[in-house]
Image 1 (cartoon, rainbow, N blue to C red):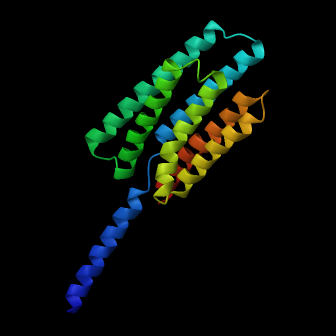
Image 2 (tube, one colour):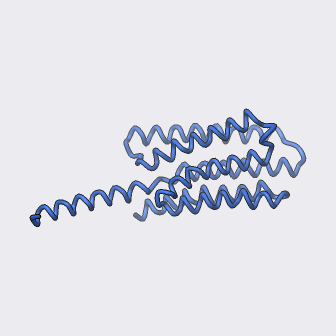
Length: 190
């Protein structure tokens, strides 16, 4: 092999490695958004449990936040898709997130007698952990850590019946929004 051929091959390997490194980096915006929204939903649920009844303002707040998060997510994805700035991992994450959220929504709306109050909150936490664990399986340690934190919060919440919503909200903030912040810091540094 000629020295120029070796150089060409090494440059090609460098390009492949650079692309592979970028493929596991993702933006944290949607993680932060959904982590904060999920935490607020769990906190309002905890407030309802503590008060002994669900209040109208909680329904309006939760419904409004959920709808706003969906609209913001759709606008975000469309904006970055049109510009061609979403990488493969981000597209996979978005697809898995929507599938997971759709499954949780079906369980909540279609089977409320099976999945009661805190069971539904736990299902949401597990469903939002799935995209993190998927990205984590591709080598993204912040995503893996975030997914593990979410799953751990479900286990801890099971054994803290008087603060279940608070424990799940902490899992949402640390596991989901925290992973999003880590992704943003990693993108800016790297």
